Image (tube, rainbow, N blue to C red; front, top):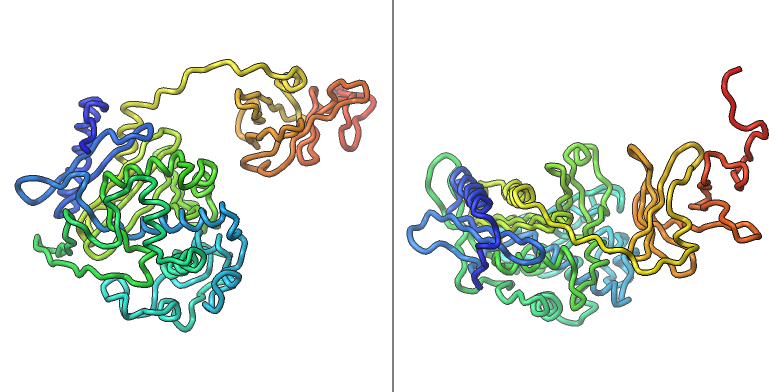
Length: 461
């Protein structure tokens, strides 16, 4: 399906085309294709190619490498949502005898399992998967390089184990489960484990000469859940929309939000670079915005999917070369171009439904000691609490339906917020995980821990 180009302004479309043209030229890619999604819908497609004539469109397949991991993570989280496993379960509980069973499902999803980055030699991306028929062949004699759960260490074998877990619990091959549970419901009919025409060929471009060498296209076998898939900008645009809002046929909005939440401890260099990892998704802070998605590479191909949830803009970029353009930068730039040139228009403000007076009474300023905070009511029934000025602890709280709220983020995530009333029913204070918030700083009429000096506030005599 051809996307409606007129939905973006001409200047925006030209800026997008210019960005991918520079990437293809400077990166010396045989071809480069890209798509942009806004508000959950594809709004732009562009292509640059070294071949005269018809350029690749949104139906041409490219190999997407490690973006495959995000698809595998979706399958695992479906198992969790169905109650077939818990993310805290050790792998051994469901897939015994691997030698890496101490790692939890969450560790494998977030690359904190301690497993090696690669399978033992020979180089698995350029050799047949038949050389590694068993999980033991993928993991090698010493699969663990680091203590489980202590550090982020990207692991392709880790996602091989997750694929095997899916096969064990579903009783069917990984690719069959993927097609039935994800590809078909989302309408990704041009995403497959093996290339389907029309598809691009993979090339290596000589680093010091403008000549090319065809790359082998291997079936990765056991390693397929880590990087096997072929897809198109059209399909990945729809997948990006799903990662932004969820789809109850596959995963709820709450679960895809969980995928986008940091789950791996960041090392010092990662903190400096503003990057971390969620559950099957890479997370980075760039150009003042939070971006999630995944990159991928296999000999002959590069791929990137980048999403800004706040801007409701996503970009997909694919190229058929082993190295060259830095597609993560290109994807982030495409998102930035649209987000800055045509900012998201917010939904109209609407008043909330009738709010119970006892809840409305909680709104307004509160003090934790001498720190000033404000509690605000949302139309959803949730509340938010944050400093009146400057930075500090802040969170949204979900209503529990019993007059309490549970923190959703930050320092107060999981903590219980409740209003404490006096015997006569008047409001005394807020209790938040044992912290007391009062209407006045150290309100003498509230139960302030440690009490309040009876002589009250004073100046210097």
